[in-house]
Length: 197
Image 1 (cartoon, helix red, strand yellow):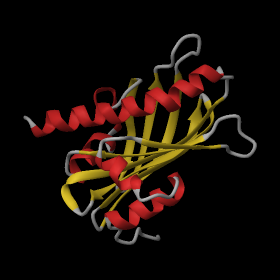
Image 2 (image 1 turned 45 degrees about the vertical axis):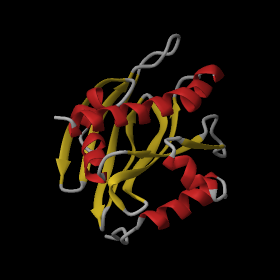
Image 3 (image 1 turned 180 degrees about the vertical axis):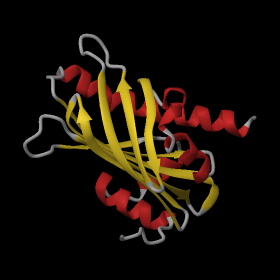
Image 4 (image 1 turned 135 degrees about the horizontal axis):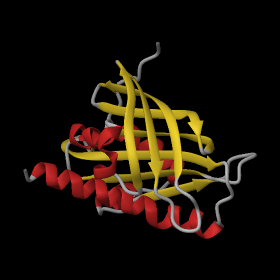
């Protein structure tokens, strides 16, 4: 099995920079709290691939604790109606998750398998669809330190989800422009709550 090489935050920033648009200002934008989102079309799919990058003022391992256990996603993430671990075997995890969709779309449920890898200060959760209300549901979380600081997490979230039903354009745009920033804000809130316990 191939393992992730050690990744320092500078290397991850370079990858993010090439994907999200070059410019010396990317690090400053992230440092200032912006969630930088890049949307790209996927050939043969009506739904785009979305990549979001942001900084959370918490150690990477604290942020990882919020995303690695789907039993707690209803508390830690946004728009989760129900979530449970079906099974866990080492780095392999199967989850069943129902997402609360806005009217007029019905809630969507998926069973996904994921690979969890913790290597050299990088935490990664990569998932793909097993079954459910989607044609495609795949993505990843990658978390490492920001600017080499162990108390700041650089978070990269990627997703391509295509429900079996048609989704109105206004909901797709809202997901890109509102839901993802809210997701990062929820993670920031939960990280603060953990820190302040």
